[in-house]
Amino acid sequence: MPFSVKTHIVPRPLHLNETGGYYAGSLIPDERTRIVFAPPFFAQAQILAGYLRNSTALPFPLEETARAEINVIARERLECGDLCLLLNRQLDREEYKVTVGSHGAMLEASTPEGMAHAVHTSLQLFPPAIFSPSPRVGIPWAMSSVEIHDRPAHAWRGFGLDCARHFVPLAELERFIDLLALHRFNTLQLHLTDDQGWRIEIKAYPKLTERGAFRSQTRFGHKTGKGGFKADPQGGFYTQEELKGLVAYAKDRGITLIPEIDLPGHATAIIAAYPEFGSAGSRPAEPTGDFGILPDVLFPTPEVMTFIRTVLAEVAEIFPAPYLHIGGDEVLPDHWQQDPRTPALLQELGLSSVQRLQPWFTGQLHQIAGALGKRIIGWDEVLAPELPTDTILHCWRGTRAIDRELLRRHQTIVAPFSHFYFDFYQSQNIGGEPLAQGGCTTLRTVYGFDPEKAGFDGVDVLGIQGQLWIEYLPTRALRDYMAFPRICALAEVAWLPHAQKEWADFRERLSVHLRRLTILGVNFRAPGDGDD
Ligand code: TNX
Image 1 (cartoon, rainbow, N blue to C red):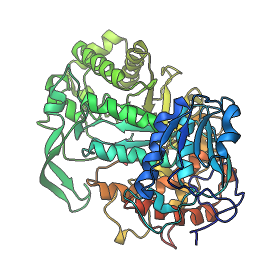
Image 2 (cartoon, rainbow, N blue to C red):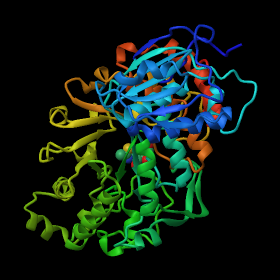
Image 3 (tube, rainbow, N blue to C red):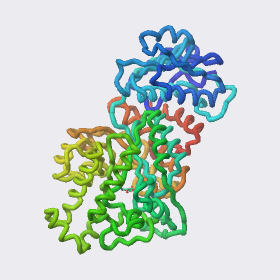
Image 4 (spheres, protein in one colour):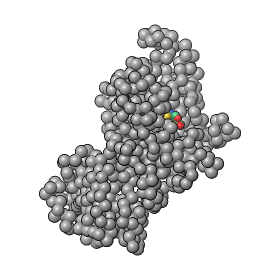
């Protein structure tokens, strides 16, 4: 028996017609089934073949077709029993179609990004075991017959991963990209620097990683609770070559990597490496193993501005995305206030108070990034009357904390902690849960997010983003547990128009989807009955 004739795709495609099912014309691949691809889609054909070969042990030879355009070869190819990845120039960048019948499967897109979505949706038309990394026997490898025509509601479907509080190994980043691609996200923001570690090689400033990437101790438990510090020598960083490889890996899967260099606060690791860049009061011996908001902040001397210009130029070389995320969150003015150089600096810059220093700083970052051909993204604390209007705001505190009039001047990424921070508990019943940041954001809370009700009506919303901060998540297993299945719900919030979401339908599809995640080795939290 086939596992099901119903499809269980997450996130749900916008238009899906279940035209048959296993007995009514599904595609049953065999030794002769080929993956035929139009030239732009070689990478996506390889990704598809990789999954299919691993689990089925069938050969799935790749064959490039010279006649790439859908209208020339579609029908003829479909009759061959092949899986065909074809160019359809009529579709938008992320729009795609999938048509499956007993005589073949046709995937259509106009760009590699669109084709990546077509591939990841198509894989979900097979039994969940298709995601097995090793051959499985006794599975009916049928692909459900469907007609899908799909496109996302939001242009920016992002996820922000903290790689600074702990070092996240490169292989885990690749796997995380695979999982985001499976859920048709298109953006991964890497939080590469913070008080606890600097994770990106910068050739002009080698001490950033020699000293700034390693620490000797880490807090256990919450600051407010019993806890304390334990000896915990750890750290690590990514070389520029590794990151360039990761950019290419993500691109083939339809995902753009956005680097975040958090400035001018969250700077303990920088100041540990280069003490002369700090303000009065900041002399950390190493990146901190503590969490929370720390007072270490850069002091904008000419040397520091040169440092920032050089760092951002190296970063911009690695990441081709048109954006640089410059952080800007949680900057305490205390050390600026205490620094004897501050009064002269304020006078020189014509600033009325130390409070105007961060807006001035953001303006400098805007200029530096602009000269590199990039737009800046900043956390919502950078919002100020003098903020250049092409700055993208990354709203994490919710619109109540923000001046709505000012917000309307900017393109915005919607990322409120109340719904999209996956370091929060996912159950009211925290007794059985691993230590988390606090708060509670259940699967249902994530799924129910409505941008209009959250105060983003009238705001130029670019899209949606979730975040995983990893202060309390030192292992991959814990990171999986907090990220999944909330990422599945987030994916659907980002992909479908709000009115098209249906909680009961999502939960039903999710039950099958969780079998896929199990086979992929994801340590997700099994959703409970009562608390989600
Ligand atoms: C706030 S969100 C932060 C992070 C923390 C997070 C913990 C933001 C811009 N700053 O540095 O990790 O809260 O939930």
